[in-house]
Image (tube, rainbow, N blue to C red; front, top):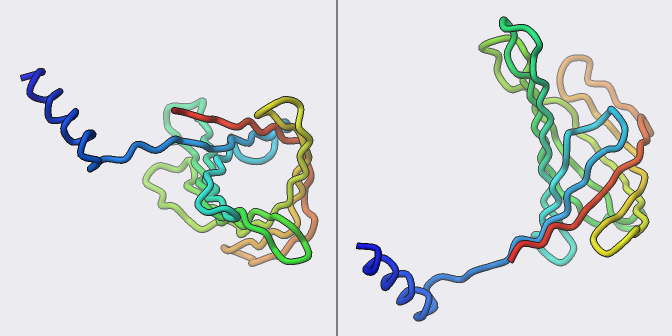
Amino acid sequence: MKKQLLAVLVAVMAFGMVSVSALNADIQLPLSGNGFLGEIHYPVTDDIDLVLGLDVAIPLHDDAGLSTELVGGLSLPIPVLGRHVIAVSATKSAVKDSEFELGNLDVTKTWLYELSQGLQIGVQLNVLSVQLKGDRTISLLSSVGPVLRANIDLF
């Protein structure tokens, strides 16, 4: 059985039916206590990156659930202003049986300095933050903090 499976796998790869591609992404972590646990910047085109983020709070009590925040957006060049990340967040509170709700629409700018090959340190500025639920407030230049970014190359 193993020999047959290996033979099929080799045949499929030999005929070019399966393409193997590399995973090349940037992982960005905040060095301060605010922000997301991490952001993954995955290149989609030459100028546009897909940005995914996750923040999970583990409760200390048994009666509470996980508090989760998911982030999705794009990193793209904006004319005159340069490269910015435009992202939308969805949050789920620690209350059991709660649903995900829209959080904020954030526009952030990051300046990075290369420490070594594949490792950068910098500053991230939250240029614009629009609260999508509740009061619907808009904040300009609401936060600034240090970040660390590493390039991950697999295969």
